[in-house]
Image (cartoon, rainbow over all chains, first blue to last red; front, top):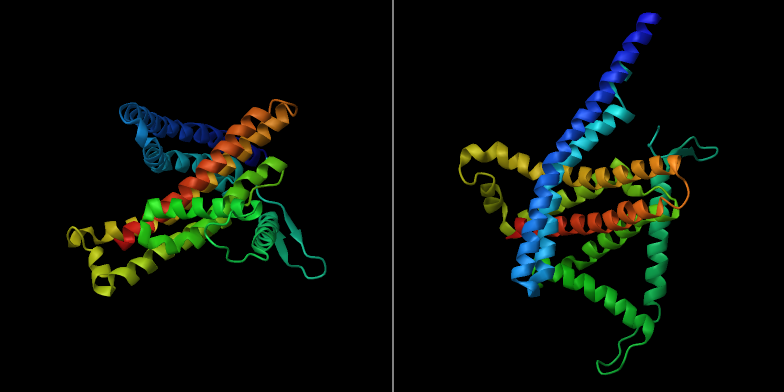
Length: 89
Length: 221
């Protein structure tokens, strides 16, 4: 019984750490999206009349760049909310 | 903490339905009633006649949706407007419904994966219809034969990435909002509501519809 509790505590703690570490992946999309936004601002400064088109293209590119960040969020959520390791214990 | 949608039993039958389904029914009801009221007794008027307010508002809505589709997919593909317009209206209401305290149906993987499956199916169907079987199958072997597994992966991956993008954004906002409500329930949540519900909801609607339109036009070219 005590062993079981200890095992559960270790798995829970490790999962919380894992969720935190998974979210480090947020750095990647943040840099990418910021770069895209900066380039978008540059483009608007050069060509203010094409602002609508530029904004649309920028948002589309940022959405695709965001995918990896969303994957890490999903992994963190699975570890915190629906932990498969705890269920297997 | 449990962020799964609530489930209830229909009395007497033992059938289980989740909150997502009932909210979606509510949104469908709202859209159907709105459409019926907005188009009731609508008749053709001469082009020089000024439309009344209801008709004017309706024309503004329809025209902006047609413009969105035309500017992304091209003038000859404006036939996609009904589907894309429905998608815009449904996703907009679904993402913004969190503002009145109802759990957004898009914070459920079942809804978002269903929508992305529709997109991927439409991409394959219209690609096949437009190009013909031979050219369609040849597209998988470009630039050369070894790229076949890569191309197949590329066709399937939007299913996962689009579904999870919408789901991840909305449920991320939902979780953070729930945490904020647990800590400070008064006044402070207004600001995060603006970002997580209004800004993020509108942007994600736009992104989902734009990506759907872009993928379908790429498959048809």
